[in-house]
Image (cartoon, rainbow, N blue to C red; front, side):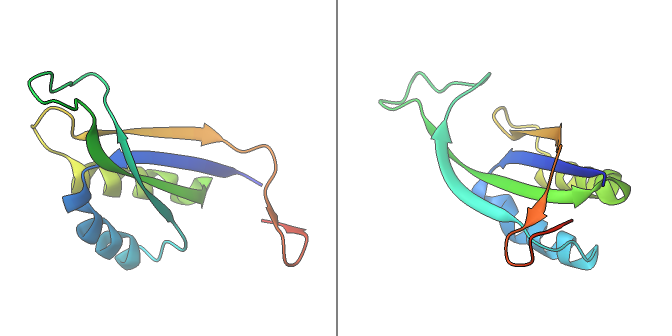
Length: 103
């Protein structure tokens, strides 16, 4: 089992294009959550410096990892500060709850 956990924080306007790209790559399953925060780029001129982004979480087999990360980077890339981040983490164990079987 070589599963990776991919987390991307992206601009909301990139989601539809990302969904289409992942569909064309036959990627199955993702979780999207609305999030607020700030990182390297902060808009201190605003009353509320928190910006709204989307957190995309995907578990993927390592053989598809490069295609997935390239898709996210291609679709979500912007020269505008605060475009987002992408992280890849190792997964020690992964089970399907319904079947109790490993991925």
